[in-house]
Length: 88
Image (cartoon, rainbow, N blue to C red; front, side, top):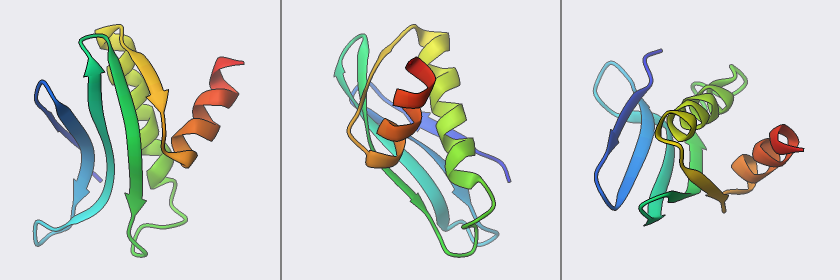
């Protein structure tokens, strides 16, 4: 599965499309300021559940945060749990 990323100065998302171009997994965020993003939503369709897709989306987010030297506010409960484990 190919994780795609699109964003602008206000918000962004990591996502996976099916063969028909429908989003079947996504992780969304918005910019709080120039150096901080709030990751607010993660969704994985039933087709992909149990395959580690949410973690793959999360890892793409973490790579983006590190590459851009951003701060993260994890308001999505899934992301908050993962982030807390990694930053302790």
